[in-house]
Length: 306
Length: 138
Image 1: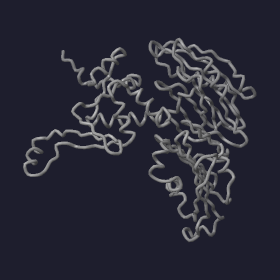
Image 2 (image 1 turned 135 degrees about the horizontal axis):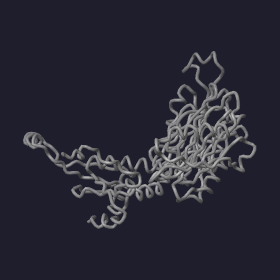
Image 3 (image 1 turned 30 degrees about the vertical axis):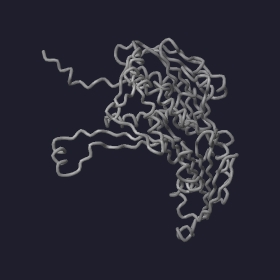
Image 4 (image 1 turned 90 degrees about the horizontal axis):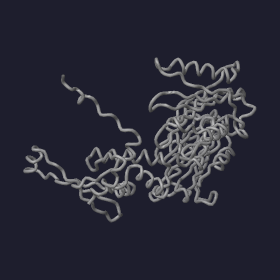
């Protein structure tokens, strides 16, 4: 496997882990309550992650593993050899959390292989996380599995959840829920919501080409044209972390939305910067009842641009 | 007994096979360079009988010109018959600082579009055939 020496963070819906740099998400489904994430390398599926909300009564991880293996055995085709299961392992880094790591080996012919699995129960977050790392016969990637499982985190750090995909990594307050995401070639966009507050994070590749067509300020206003509609925005050019930047912000215009007079005042702030080292444009927009919401700045500060 | 095997759809390519395949340019296409450094493809059009008939009354162009943008021109330049799709993806990701997956999705979609229009062909090679594909390039 290439790139095993270099690791990249992967974070989605409050679950974060480290994977080899050449692995990337192939499928993302679900929401914070339950979901599925599939990670692939260049040729095949390497890892699957499932999470779901735990019920009111806390079921121990060992019992969940029992149920899971029972299901796996049930789904085996008739006459298939019984998979061998090596159970009862723990991960040092996850001490204090109810978890069980186990390995199953099975299949036949070209499909002979297995998976290292980790089942983790986090009662505080009311979460059950199941991570499976697949391997082929002859190379079970034990050290790799140990490292990946050891890096799994399900609890927010300082009230912030880590989001990391395709090299974009940022922190968002735990209470913000992902409303929508668009993962397109060269353009990643995330929209988070907490009550009536909104937070947008955008990364666009091919910055040099984009800025050849329009300046940064114009790109910022164009990117957030729809959510900034109705706001009396003033924009200005500046610097951010040593990079060329543009900011804009303003209050919701009562002329544009007269019914907003019955609600709390609403403000929007947006920041964009160009990182020439990464040839990328980054933008963060926040809509909040606070004029200068510090959460937007905190999110922008957490983005590693190069 | 009749052999109905030809009814069966061909086996889809594995990921490894598709990444190892080599895009080859259609030799009938002329390549020009624009003032902006972009590639312009001059594609000869095969006229149908009705088009030939119409061309006696109206002007029917015999060639179609397609100008590729900066990235398209770069990928076209990489389709030299020596590089396979994996090499092109790596080159594009390196030049434009894209994630491998981002580059893969766009390169595959772009090459598929070119292949559908007959601008390129895709050679499926066995592991030892890579040099031979390059030899075919004039």
